[in-house]
Every structure is written in structure tokens, then in C-alpha cells.
Length: 421
Image (tube, rainbow, N blue to C red; front, side):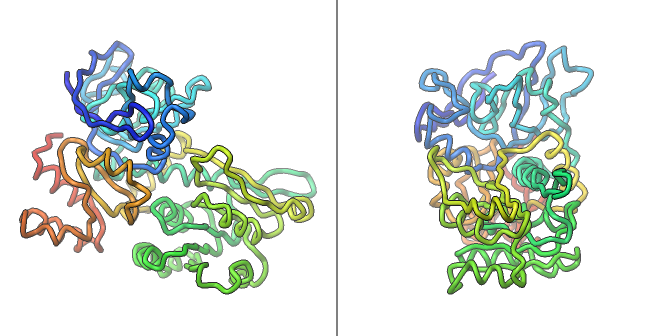
């Protein structure tokens, strides 16, 4: 069968093409992709091309399908998996396979397996790793956003503190402690804030920094301090660019105690150094935001590492368990990942959006792969109403949901473009 997909041939070389998918084998599954949220990691992949750790060296002749935050419906199941999976099942998937130590992942490494496509083929390793799972939520886009949320969940789970008398590691953020999320008003940061508030950890105070007033204002709107207070969390937003002395100002928010848990959501050396300087005794710093520069580094205080027992670690991606937790939190309504999305488009918008992702303001860019549509800010739907009355309806729908993308809007857009599920 034919499919249309965005494929990568080299550095900043993404092409929307139609090509033939092979017949699936007995140990494979054919899926119809409905949604894929575009990740900054895909931009980093495009920027590095063959230099990326997950990219094959022959992509110039055997291009890979991009996109790894995708969801859809199973179409056909190979014999090996017919007792476990059925056609029509809606799914979420974990791209961090780590199959037998391999770095290969959908959206980075496979010719027929990725999210920026109408149809893809799940290879046997996906099912063997239990990375294909049913999703019972009310929309496809929420299943797509479960993957980025699972990355933050993994970062939280990987935090640790120490028991000084027996050197035991106590996993997770410190109960009742202070947490700071540096550069946390972007889409991934918003997911982390939501999990910090509504997740299983009892964090006392969460401070979120940024240097963009517009991003801070939107974060306050979609993730208000009142919502956090209802869950027993004190939430504070800070523009560090407006602080005369950012280090002292951040410490003052904690009455001088410092931060027990520090998460860095933007790869900037000065941000990393500021984060390192406000750690409390036994503080744990997580460098969450992956840089594209292999030589990225920043100065750290090893005096504090020695005498104040501070520690630094990092995570990339999440586990199957993290994704299952994310999907359960989303499906139950405890976390609404809609706050991450600011733009919506079709498959024809993916390549250009990905290549210019750092230049496009706002949060997550959500793509639907079964139709064409320019990548459009949700806030701009009303401006398109004169050209297409459908956007007036879509605008009204989103405004009725606090300006957010929502399951009703997804159903409307899929119906409008004649997408059959």
C-alpha cells in the first residue's frame, strides 16, 4: 500500500513523499497514524543528520520517517501478535525501545516506522519491548502527548536524595521540599509543572523560571497558582531577567534554604550555572534538556558537591512504566496535556515546522497526518474565519475550553477533513 510521510535524507533535509509500504511480516503490525506532536528532539535530529546517535549512516539512500510522539489505530496484525492486538485498537507507544542495547527508535532510525506518516509498520522489537499499548483516553492528541509527559515523569522518578548515615538513595523529589524548574514555561515545562502538582510526590513549593513575560503569563493562565494551592503546592513564577541578583532572589524565595530538586529545561550554560548555585544541602540537579552540541558544558561547584552532598544527573526519554503512568493520569483527567499545545497543522506542514521549530513561538506544534493544513496558532483560528467558516466554529470551540485544544476540537477537525477512524 502507498503512504505519504515526511522522510529525512540528511542534515536539514526533510521531504514529504509518497511511497510504497511493504507487506507486513508475521511479527509486524500495520498502523494508521492520526496525530504526532512535533518534538524539539526531531529538530535536533534534522540539524545533525547522520551525526545524530540514533540516525543510520545510509539515510541519504534509505531515508527514515521522522516523528516519535504519535498515536493512531491498528489496521492489521501479523500472526505472532493476533492474540494480543486487534485491528481497530487505539494505541499509544513508547519510542525509547532500548532493544538489546540498541539506540534505534521510531522517528530516528527506521524506514517504515515513525509518526510523521499516514501509515507505518511496527517492527517486532516494539511489541517484544511492550512499547505498543492500548490508550483509552478521549482523543488521539492526548495519546501523542503522553510520550513527552512520560519524559518528565521519568525525570521526577530519577531524582534522588541520600540518607547520610547509611548511604541509601531515596528515590524521587524530596517530600515537602523546594523544587525549581529552570526555563519551565515551555511545553515540556508545563507538563512537568502539572505532574509536580497532580502527581504522586508531595512537593512543598515549585518555583518556575523564565525570561519571557509572555510565556510566563500563558503559564500562569493555563497552570494557575490557585490550581496548585488546591493540591497543597505553593507555585511561584519568576522572571529571572528582571532580578537584580538572580541567585539571591531565588534563594530568598526559599528563605535561604535553597532547592532540594532542580530541573533544567533549557540547555544554556548560564542557566545551568545559576541552577547549580541555588541547590540546597543534598540537592539533586537534573539536566533534562538535551543539547545538540556534544561538547556542551557548564561550570559546576565541586566544593558544594563535596561538602553539601549535592549531586547531578540526567535522563533522556521515559520507560514503558512512565508512559503507562502518563496515559493513566491523562485518561483519568488528573493531568490535561492540552496546556502544551499552541499550534495545529496537517502532514504538509510538518517538514517546514520541524526545520524552523526554534523560531516559532508558543508551545507544542500538533500535527494530524491524515490531511493537509498549514501549521496554525490556535489563537489565530478566528482570523481565518472569513476565508473558511469552519475556523469560526473551531475558534469558538477552543475559546469554550479556555483557549486550549480539546477532544471536541479534534473530532471536529477530523470530521471536517473526512478522516475515517
